[in-house]
Image 1: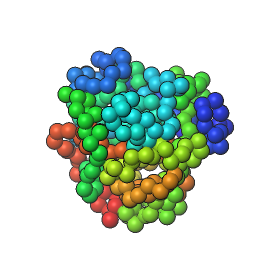
Image 2 (image 1 turned 90 degrees about the vertical axis):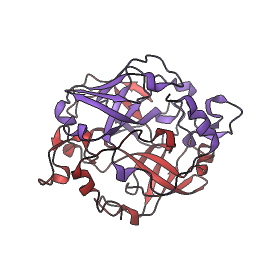
Image 3 (image 1 turned 135 degrees about the vertical axis):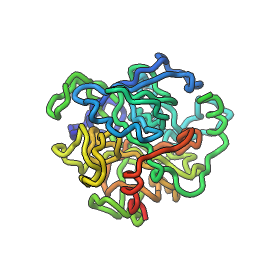
Length: 169
Length: 169
């Protein structure tokens, strides 16, 4: 990670420092194009790339789940929402701020998904439940630690429960 | 988000494209220096910065929790682990790959923490349970959606349960 001078070609104020990251690997997925739903049908693994070695994954198979931090790099810059919109442009749902939904057309376009670990084979981490298309850059992998789960009662609005109805299947 | 030519001053191979991100806001926290434990004592809010407005947070208070994606920018580049080490350098725990632990000295130094939402006030999102120090850049906010929680049985090794013993308190 490095601090660099900001550019100002993306609608930002240019006042904040840019942050430069490098992928640690890529998603290899049976799904090549972005779709809304039915991600459970997808087979996927993450493969670490140089300079990383299998050392970086030692002990990961003692966890049941991993959080995959990736970049949704098929997002078109011109479609990024910075304010509020109807989720999936469905007027039946309320107008919601971009940081109150998980839509892909968001600033920085980071995805974070908690996947079941199937197996680790050398540089490859095979997972179930990864909603990322083939070739997506991966920025980080973190084991799912129970103590980091949400604490206290859970609450979410009706629109997101409806939206998620066919998301996995 | 933009693709740029990679630099090669950080030990990476230089083969992967760099990814440039811009903070959407900052962490304002009662904790100014990095510590291992007792994060529940910390009071914190995230404040969005220009060009973002309160529009981007509409509807977030209908969720109980939010995932905060931030940068652990106090990490010294020379201390980043790319292979494996004993968590917290404690030899009583096994040697673990950096992507099988949540240590801060990691490539890209992204933190992802699920926090309880206390209230939203204009550009400010007040939360409980944020393990980020004052001034940390925030890259994204995502509502905690129950259907994105880990599915199937949970399993984690003994060392992480021990490590987490005083993490919140």
